[in-house]
Structure formats: C-alpha cells, structure tokens
Length: 638
Ligand SMILES: [Zn+2]
Image (tube, rainbow, N blue to C red):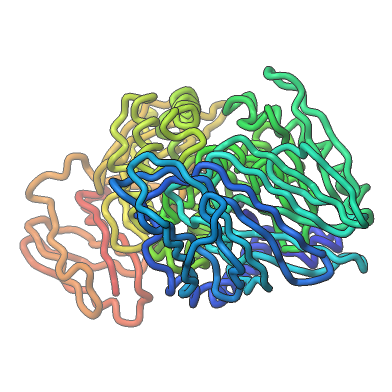
C-alpha cells in the first residue's frame, strides 16, 4: 500500500518526496480517526477453533449503487477437540438474511461485528464442514475506505481496499493475520458493459439478461485483507514478462481515459519484474497472472495478483509489485511487523533506481529516506500501537525507516549474505504463502551471514532513534590518520554498534575506511598514502545517522589516568564542573564544531562552566595541554 499526493499526481506535476510525506501524514491522520472506533471494538479474533479452507464469494453489485448483496460460503476444518459455534466477522451495518450449515438453515446471532453460527451438533477435531451466509447492505466503510462507490469521468465505479481491518465491512470473513484462506473463488455479477477485476485467474465470464458474471479463481493461500474486487467500464490489455518459469501475463484493467498513460507505465514495469525475479526468485504467482486495476483511492494497494492503482508511475507500480513477494506471498504475522511488508516494498523501489530503472537517482533517494527518518528524533520500526491505523502505516517509520533498516542490514552483512538471507526467508516453507515475524527474518539473515544480529535488531527494530556522531580527526606527519568517534543518540537509547564508513580524500587519492564503532569515545588509526584534505562521513549513504566532522587535534590514546577529567552533572542544565588532576585548557564546542568556551584549568583544581541559555542538546568538551588533546567527551544539556 502506498499513498501519493493524488491531485498533483493526476495533474502530472512533479513534486518532491518531502511534499508527499507531509501530505501522507495528513491523510493518515484522517484515516486514523475513521478507523479508531472500529478497532477499539475488536476482540480476540484468533482462537476460534477452526481453520478456513476455501471461501467462495457470490456477489451482486451495481457500480452506481453503494450496496452489496451476496452469499459467502466458507469451508473450514475444526482445530480443537470439539466445535459448537462458528464465529465470523461482519459489520452490523450489513444484514444477514439466512445461514445454512451443510445446506440446512441454522440459527445465528449477529452483533458487535460478529456472526455466531450455532452448529446442530458439535464437530470433532479435523472435521470439515461448510457454512453459507446470505447477506446484503451498504458497507460502512472504514480504514482507507474498504468499500467505495464513486465515479471517474462520469462512469460509476466500486472498489474495495480492506487493509488493515476493513474486510468485514463488506463480506463475512475471518479477519486476522493467523489463518490464510487456502483457496478462493470470487464471482461478481454486474450490469453488462462493466468489467470486474479480481484475484487470480478469470476462469469464466458469462452474460445473461443484461447482467455479466465474472468468476475469479485464486489457488494460493491469501490473507483476508488482500481479497478484493473492482468494477467499472474498464478497458483491458496485457503486457508479457519473460521469465525462467515461462511468460508471465500482466493483465491491466484501466479507465478508458487513462489508457495511454497506463500502457506506458505498465510497459516500463516489465523490466522491474525481471529485476525482482533475478534478485528474489520468480514472481510467486507466475502460474496465475500479475495485473493492475485502476481505482480512485490516492495511491496503490497490492491485492494479490491484481494491484489496484490510481495511476501508473514507476515508483507506485514498483512498490506494489514488490509486495507480491513481501506482504502477499510472505505476510506480516502481526500489524506490529508491517515493516516486513512496507519496508521491503519501499526498499525494492529504491533497488530499481540502483539498477538504473526509473528516473530517480539512488543516492538522492537514500538521502531523502534518511532525512525523512531523522526529521523527528524518536520512533521505532516496531509498531507500538496496532490499534492506530496511522501508526501502522507511518510513512516515516514503517516505510522509510523500515527500508533504511534493510539497507543498513545490507551494509552490515554485505551483499551476498544479505540477498541470500532474504531469498531464504522468502523460500522458507513455513513462511512462503504464510505469515512471518521479524524474528523469522532475523534468523534467516543470521544463518546466511553467521553473525549475531541481536544488538542490531534491538537498536534498529524495537529501539528508537538513531546515532549522532561527533568525529574528530588529525593526521600526523607520517600520514597516519587518527580518528576519535564519539556517539550520542537522538533519544535516550542504547549504543548503536555499527560499522562507520568514512572517505579520506587527498591529492591523487580517495580511500574508503570503515571503523567498527562499538563503544563511545573510540580511537582508530589508518595509514594513508598522503596528506588528507577532506574526511567525509558516509558518502554512499548507508546509515541513518547525523554526524559532524571536525579536524583535530585528537586526544592522546589511551588517555593517561592522570589526564582524565570528571564532568558533573552530565546531563547538566545550569552549571557543569570539570575536575581532575591534569591542568590545561577546557574547550567546549557545539555539535557543529563552533567553539563556545575556553576555560583555563589549573592542576588539581576544578573549573565551572555555566551553559545557561544554550539550547538543549549535545556538546563536546576537550582538555588541551601544549597543543595536545589529553581527554575529550560529551556533555548533554537539557
Ligand atoms: Zn505498500
């Protein structure tokens, strides 16, 4: 799923991603309000004692009327010792007309968004049975607009978009992230002249009495939120993607007025699918199809085998296609782990730029993502409030930081282990066409690399914030580079243990250096071929971090015991005391390297500094004696 800045996009105006981000935030706020009430009302949907096997939706809709009428038949297998009731989800705004069990009418209740069906006799473990629910009504519409009746260029349209909690707005289902529907048939009857888009293969299309019925058949496990249809006066066309598994059909249903732009956009997606096939294995649903159906929501939604998209830009289509691997084939097992869907889809869009597809520059794209993440100090990739749709779909955290966490994993592990671990994750039979958690991804990356990623995931997945580096360097006449790395965190957080990339540039040379920064106030050295004129931090944009680089002098390493200063209190707010045996000059700078104070400190005597009026944040102090830095450290003012 991805939001766009719809109006500007439709007008064809190119906009910066920051504007998209700002717009996204506003949209998410509105959607969050719409969904809040409904989510609060949800109980535990997991322990119901049965597993959904097959579902068949027989629906009648007219795209000009906000109404659904139909029968949903659910075949299930009992997963507990005995089952006397079957509970399914359906919003109370819809009316259940009748329910049959194995073809015979049964009693039921429908309240609080739940249909409770009383079975005539209790069913034993592993029994397989079937219930059919006849219902009708006007779907209430929640979340991102789960069932929307609208129009385009004067033609009526209905589309669905159920993620995360909207499926039960329009059909009786088991709405969770535990149990995928093993196989699915969706039959939709509409007035002739319309086409219906759906999941899987269109196996039959019949006409009778001015009505047309479309039968879509999907034979892969699918989570409830990815079941979808859309109906309007579509124009169909296909593209073809050559792959190792044979030609893959890309079937597109677009508005007549959008045909030209759609054809350009989907033709360009062919090479994107080939890139993903190469990197992550052939498109998971190649036996059925891939496709697009145009709709009016301001972005795209990765309905399995049939993405719904408002328009056909490279970024949007690349993102939604990526979801077919990440989100659809392997689905987050909790909304807490939505980054397994959205972080990957966002990162794969970035990979298209790295491989020369689309018009964006990969470096610029990375800088934009980093700036989005560090625009606020806190926030974790792990969703800390899954009742909030806005928090689940946080553009800054689930999408941008999620994508950068993957990029940083690639930095830490190297390309070979990273991509191997991701392919192993996708191909794990426990996960493929099932659900995954962050722990599953971590285990595969650890197995592929042989590295323990516990600290990494503690910092970057469940932890908040990012590192702020203060890097001081000096080169001695033997061309040895001395580097002192100090690290603060944007919010109170444990230490980010990361390899820090630097680039040393001098006359006739440019040398990349990587220092493994595992503790505060660390010293590193590197022999260089000549005098350094510039030291760059992270020139290839691997890290979510801020940094300042200042030229020496670098403190003596290790700091002699008698030269150590004690700084109290730290954090401080009105007065700070520097005490210790050594004498010299205490120089205090801000994070940008601007000198704020020079305090003469006699031997064995303390000196005081009053930071009153200085902004809260990180400062650096150094004790300098005869031109050498004896000790240095951080000072936090708050
Ligand atoms: Zn998405």
